[in-house]
Length: 112
Length: 111
Image (tube, rainbow over all chains, first blue to last red; front, side, top):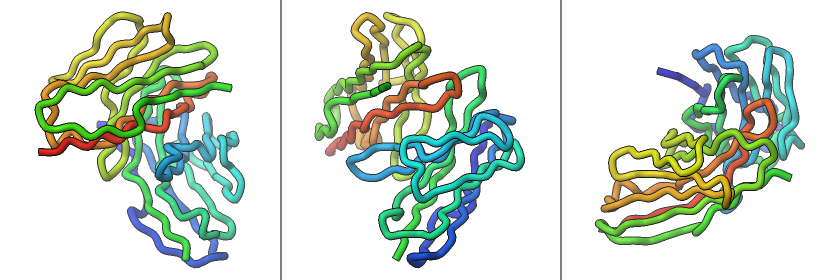
């Protein structure tokens, strides 16, 4: 069974704080993704990575950075959290051979 | 620019009704189309479609791809309240497997 886990289900942070969201997958997938999901806007891609230490900007990378030091782990960093980053954050992974993407349980982040 | 559009955006039906959800796409180098169901948590996989005209079925859910029309439909027959969810359509873009999502269709099934 594919498993994608995220470090927190719910998180509350203050404006200006540095926030780390961690994601781990256990299927040896090459590709990992960070999406945010907002009502009426659907899922939007923030960053993705197709190999260790490789990263590509998605559609809305501003205000975010990522780190992939190990194949199984992909971290999303909010350098200075702002209220407009309050959202549901979903991590996902897939293999390079097929596009079937598996999602983690999501982290609901609230920035006050 | 790659694009996926779903319709309707929301739908309210009663138990026992049949619903059809639509997904259209514009993607270069199309390889597959995926359907997901999302309740109050992460999206869960329903179907992956790669060939035109071949129906995929799982219980009361079925889906088919039409590559000529660049679209797919997801059918749910004899709906139940447990079918209430957001249904997401997605298409991989580029060589890295990143998914382009539609806006989703929010289905509410009333008892």
